[in-house]
Amino acid sequence: MYANILMSTDGSDVARKGVEHGIALAKALNAKATIVTVTEALPIDFGGGHDSGWIPTQAEIDSFDEACRQRAGKVLDQARAMAERSGASVELLHVPNAHPATAIVETAKSRGCDLIVMSSHGRRGLRKLFLGSQTSEVLVNGSVPVLVVP
Image (tube, rainbow, N blue to C red; front, side, top):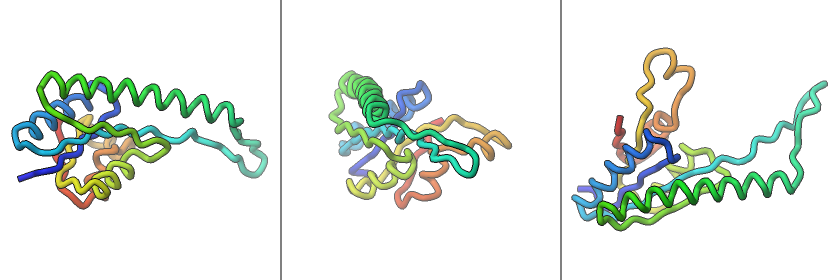
């Protein structure tokens, strides 16, 4: 049914549930599996009006980018270990300096994925409305089915 599954993770316990489920599904279907983690760009405040804002130095940007690479490496190492324990083969991908939901949707398109597996924090009511979620954005903006693991 599904031949190319994309899973996303930020390394959280909630996200790990989605990765575990996605790995098991990919293995059961003998599908190609890709696990992606996305790190956002350093927020820069150019200020406005009387506000002076904050523009980082190149050294600060480089330090932030290196910390993101290291964090992404740890997240993907955990995902690799999960896949190895289950005997599944996965491709690992870090997308730096991107909005997570947008990067997940674009990765699914560019890699020809036919299913995205993600976790959800399960927020309800006003908390969901005000906090939103990357999962909600992927559901709205994606063009392939999304399996949401609670």
